[in-house]
Image (tube, rainbow, N blue to C red; front, side):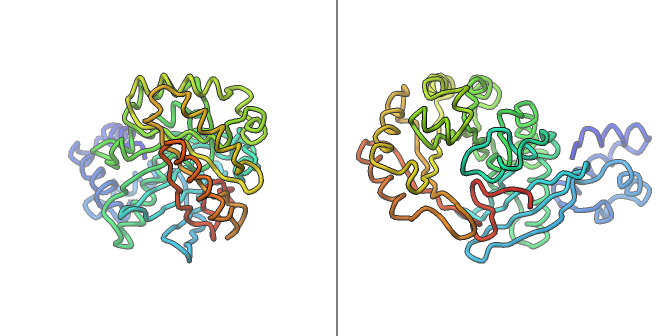
Length: 338
């Protein structure tokens, strides 16, 4: 929701100025799903808002709930009829929202279902931030929580290829008068748009950066992450070195372990060597993810743990990230708006 637009609309239609504060409280504190639920607003304002300023920039078509963990997925229909998915997860005592930034994706990573949709269009900043507002409404309605704790830009699309809208969405999500999620509780995941790392360090220095690497061999990464043909491992290494120097922030390397593809001892050695080639590499932490091949089918846990043990032997900080929502196709790489 574009609150500034609503303030302008109220002023233009000569509604009392104090009504803007009531609208803001209704949306961000009461988390109303429709203007009819805004009990503090008179009928004429509610009618005007219903016709001109919907609470959300989409409608929910379907929700699914995992039977194995506390994860939920929503299929959202945008105003032009295109569809996206967004995910809610209960992690570490709080609630994390995974947002999409594009309809489909042009990068085409080999293991990712979103890439098979191809790229349709960028999402607007409202469509991105409204995904957080949507889940806030759900949390409050179900009396599960009063706020969203964390937001990860790890859904459909490549955030740094929709840079302007992604940055504006982060500022809306972190605005203390709006959704109030702290910058350090927001993470942006990229498949490696290296020429945007400098901009990100300037525009959003407190936001967490996660780089989806998946291989430290250029030829192999070309096949897994085709964007590597434009921004290869040397370019990424240089961009990370500069980013860490600018921000002094920890960077996360996301590595999806694909059984029989990038899980051998030589992959561990190459990844470790690449990380150690980044200046101030003590600020790099590796998140290993078991590849989600389909509903319930993943890379064996033993394979991922052996990979982690190998990196630890090279004094590299590493952890195995728990994948959630696999049984409802809500885990990493599974979102496909179906």
